[in-house]
Length: 390
Image 1 (cartoon, rainbow, N blue to C red):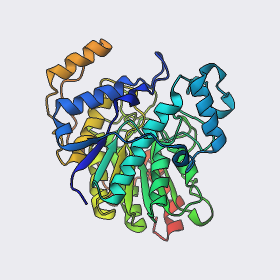
Image 2 (cartoon, rainbow, N blue to C red):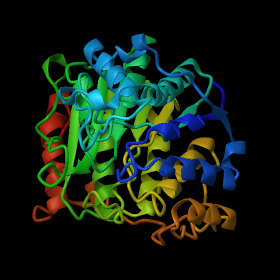
Image 3 (spheres, rainbow, N blue to C red):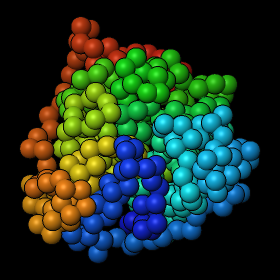
Image 4 (cartoon, helix red, strand yellow):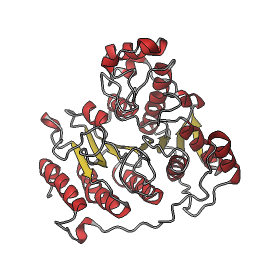
């Protein structure tokens, strides 16, 4: 296995653009790639542009009639079929939608192939993580589910156990749905409680079906959860499950919309806590998956202040050259931010909360604490199904 990490990047992914007033502003991708370069991280990785996912690859997850509907809407946005989730407020149709969505999917599939074949130990596609797309419908700003496609490709290549960790503020419903009855895939999603946030799924009781019962794991966090609670919940659930499942590959989704400045959700997590979870995922990949790690982006709508810094940290961790939190951001990048957005860019790679403190689950359970109640609900729902103590 090569020790060098891959960064999947093709400038054309910035064409994933739902329009001027849509929260999914592709400038977040361009600014992330630029910040990676400004800090010299692109010299520490192999930058690779994979080919777009072909139709046979897309069919590993998506129905043929849905792919046809995306192609039709891509050719004529005015004719988008809303029964497939296309042409809606969340997922407006736009010219070239199929091509750029397939390109993003291709980067994640390429990342999975590189890691499985040993061409790279780690691979990052921060343009990916479009985890809401369903087999037969677009949903939640997501057209093709690149995360599910990457996992499906790993299974096609011979992987017998793939673990997926999703720390986006929204439930990773599309990936869960794709593998609901497949015991080869363990999906773990930590997200804001479905009572208060789209897509209103991801309850602890959603645990998979048939022989895969116990392979879907959902931690539904109370609105307002901050750094200490978020990290406590992650470490109270994820490591034990990975130790039990023994994945051959770890696929992680790092939506930056858990941040306290994100306009579309209600958690209160800092950039520093996001970095701490990225570090933890890297360590878990080495401890339980032979170092094989595919890391994806996801949501994130504070497109200047949060997303570029968060995903640049992710690239640095995967590259083996972590960016220190107190690092001053180059002035040239901040000038680019202003030129592109007329906003002032952040000055340092931290929110001033590093290192982040949290209490381990083993330190005790508070029955009156809503965060602890959420964690216990997940452990009680899933752990016994896997023969583990809740």
